[in-house]
Image 1: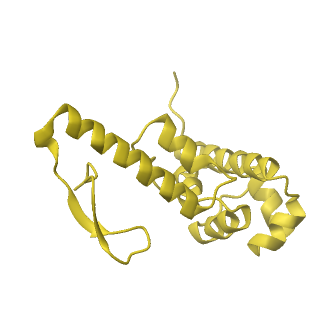
Image 2: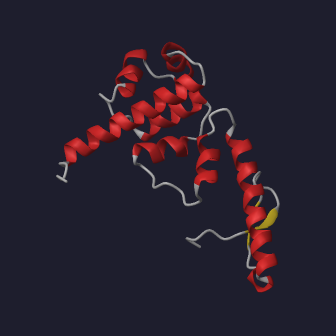
Length: 150
């Protein structure tokens, strides 16, 4: 297998993010022109992104995510700006669900994490380590499962 040069890798990333945006737009049943208006990005530039001719900045990806009503994190991961979060296929599916708002996705992830935590505790009662942190709205502290990075 031959190694690709860095320019080809950047081109591939641009093509991948463009295809991903096009798929998300198609799933949302939004025209290119509609997304252009919703995201505040020119129609020709958005078309070039979708065709893999341009690699958008993080700021442009955030605008596109807002227009598509999907997580900017999902676009950052697809564009290679962020590493994919650990979590498996269910977590990935929740993050990729374009028909859900960011708030709905976070609630689903919180419920899923609470089930995992409960299962770990029932299997090993001494595994009840939690970290105090703000709840989803950032108001009251709640216990949560620490991430692998903590």
